[in-house]
Length: 124
Length: 124
DNA sequence: TTCGGTACTTTGTTATACAAGGTATTAAAA
DNA sequence: TTTTAATACCTTGTATAACAAAGTACCGAA
Image (cartoon, rainbow over all chains, first blue to last red; front, side, top):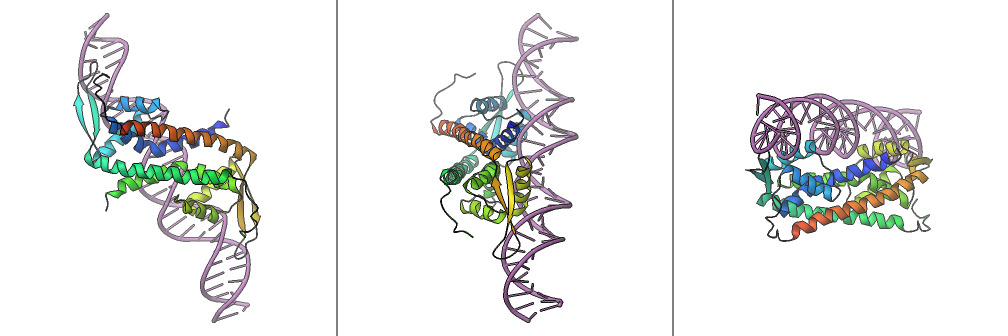
């Protein structure tokens, strides 16, 4: 079924749109290192891969939204635990609003599109 | 206030994620030409510009999701009215599901992040 | 001392949105 | 009849971002 490529592609774009926001949400719950962030997002069907996440974390850190600390791992090399900063929390609360507005926007055109077209020969 | 650049940037990304879906939603309500699509989306705070929309409409047409017809304008050059095809409708209904899943995903991490962190020293 | 697992990082490619500029059509003014 | 203004469609160049893939490094156990 290659038909689904179209939908799959759009789905990917939607996911991308909320990626940054999602990562900040995860970190609002508590400090995490890359692999655990990936896992948590995967659990809710938001797919991210290393090559995407690492640069993004670095970008957010450089913007002052995140900081990190090293922590020993029970097995393997040390882990870089990211945590959200005060500034990050502020911005995140704005993103919360942004998200809710977006949902409202989409829902409004979505609802409109589900109504019968109505007899409007009016708009010419 | 350059602080808002971060949030503004993320907001833009979110909008982009739903762009394609939004356009299809608008066209599910009825046939429209480019400028009217832009206006309808602007009305619900989803900003699109010509340079984005035209290539996107062409892409969707080439994918068989849309078709178009020319129609006289009361003033100025003729308008290219886009309409959604049967295939487009099918795909759109899948996108409806995709959108709802995304909302659910985000809401679930969002809700989790608003709870008190809880005393979990458990996940090591 | 090598092997397997885990973790972090970088590089090159591709897709996409957008700004900016361009072409074409129409009707009305000059 | 030429010019202007408004409307509409289209294209090109640039910047950003995600991703695949490959690379580096650490650690403990065989």
